[in-house]
Length: 264
Image 1 (tube, rainbow, N blue to C red):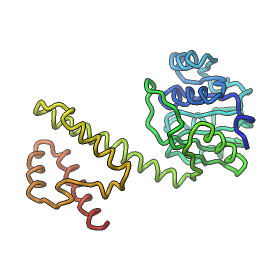
Image 2: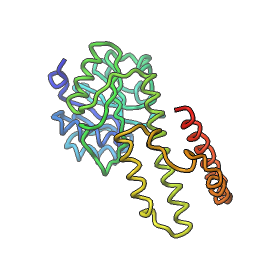
Image 3: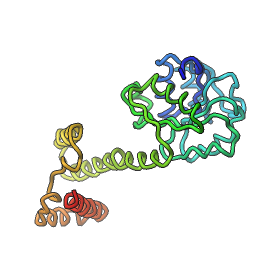
Image 4: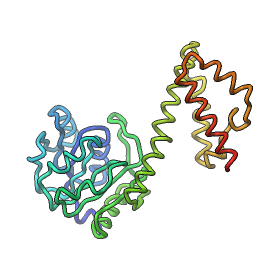
């Protein structure tokens, strides 16, 4: 099933980071951004102006003459948004990594699913979806084929993935992206207390990220935890005694690294 034969006009519900990137990616792929919704007029207007299209701040007033609804809103708002949409016969997807497909079931939609990009987006750093993995799920085989074709028209890495697998993927992504970024923040805080610029460890961070392009992270692991160097570990824990929250994180991760190395 060719998505571009069936889907020409796309409605973006949301105006945040994911919505901005999706709107641009869909437009660049040849789809028409038919309408934009946001609960606040300013954000709806800004995205609609960038896409040269109409906007609304009322879900009940969404135009019916669209070919696809893309819900790119916060997970906490998703259930309310889904059931507030009155048009039931148009395909609809959400972009959440953790919300299951059955969120659509009570609301009467005929063709629905999930279009989850495995990437962290920013409004001011829009990017092509071509290298970004997109995970697709749908309520029936025909709709899934349509959504897979849609994803393949924009990305070279497309996966059919049910809600349970996608939940595991989202948890893994939080560890790999959100948690690792917070550890960079902690490192920066430790350095700042001694007036050491983060740039001193930036090459180390980049080298670590580069290594896992070619090998499993567990095989790229280095440091005192791998060697079980208790003298170094104890000295680090002592250094962190005035920041007990960092000390706990250091101790927990060190123990888990050692355990993982023993079990590999």
